[in-house]
Image 1 (cartoon, rainbow, N blue to C red):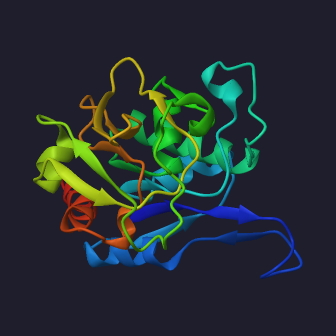
Image 2: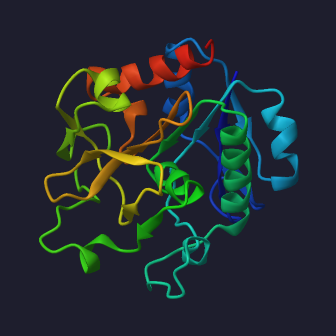
Length: 233
């Protein structure tokens, strides 16, 4: 049973009232790997109750940012958009899952939140912080690759995907600046923006900056397969 975090939207569009959202292929990717996805509404106080019932946690992406104050940055870039209730819930779930040594996969914004939970920090806006940066918010559709990533040898991610390079999609204006004291970088883009992190203190603690649920390359599917396999250990 795999807990999957939800996005939340203000009234408008689907409903006249606030509503949760989750792209369908997150759930499909988990099912394809043999898991049972379960949506996790936003209430930090229920984190332990959810964690008592699930076997792994997937922290999803979204068009918003982690509050810079959570990683010690007093300034906030003009592009930063917050969803405080979502972030509070995801941090409670992530911290609780790691305390239980429960498998955790962070995807895109979920990787950034995982880095913060591990004591790391973020780049608030790549175009203003990285000289000659790639276009990390790709213009082509998300089910297509936007750029390559180089995967470091000796890492969990390298063992999972079985290759030194992957073509990935890209939909982010922020990135991990450093992943925390004990975590390591496992993948970078050609402009050296961090694209993946992991922490080997845990049985499965992995974050990727792209969206592997689109299954663009075989390695994407293997990420979900390995997450599900880790639940049995």
